[in-house]
Length: 268
Ligand SMILES: C[S@@+](CC[C@H](N)C(=O)[O-])C[C@H]1O[C@@H](n2cnc3c(N)ncnc32)[C@H](O)[C@@H]1O
Image: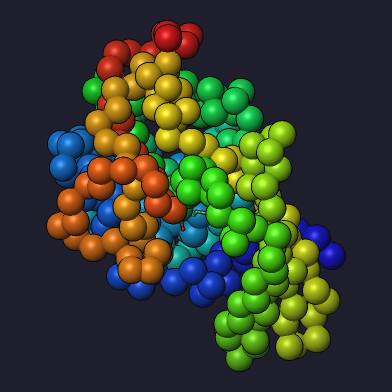
């Protein structure tokens, strides 16, 4: 059986990737405050809605957007407050200038695999943002994988217990150099007799200088682009941490400002 076990089972996703102190939401709020963002926030790739709801609780007017109906249904039921809508990162139109900030957490941006999808994402963000609005994103760093053969091609086994069932995953990462993708194959088994599930997904291997160029080409001024701990890294991000100076480690933090109103065209 194939599928995406985690996006099809949002409760299981939260159990597998717990964030009880809502570090992802706190990290985003820290960036938004530091750069004086207005109240309206669009959380793209909002998943289970836990980060969107945390930002709502911090006083923001939040719209969470995701492609997965299962995630959206879970978000509406379990993390109320924000409005939840279905939208595709690769190109969406939620109205012009409807948001003061777009946040895109936990590598959701890397579901833009091709250059066209990245262009679609950035021009859609720019349309959604008010002039001067912010794009705040946190993701794995493509450059981190250069030379890191120890991370690739070797199955890694993880186990966790959810609702008295032991779930076991065997994950293998490979680099597709032609497509510039980090491909992940994960085989899930459970001790409740359910059939194994194979999940295949991929992230764009996006490099810091490439991202800087794309942001500039789409009319964004880069305010921050550096590495730093993520909400779910070890050690995790903590409040008050100064922005990093390099783009070497596993996670990239990006804050960029939309400099002028969207014209619908790329302006290099
Ligand atoms: C790693 S999860 C991140 C979820 C959430 N931001 C978090 O940190 O818990 C990635 C999310 O992106 C969504 N996603 C994947 N491809 C997408 C696309 N093309 N458009 C919109 N959402 C997408 C998935 O459904 C999933 O909920």
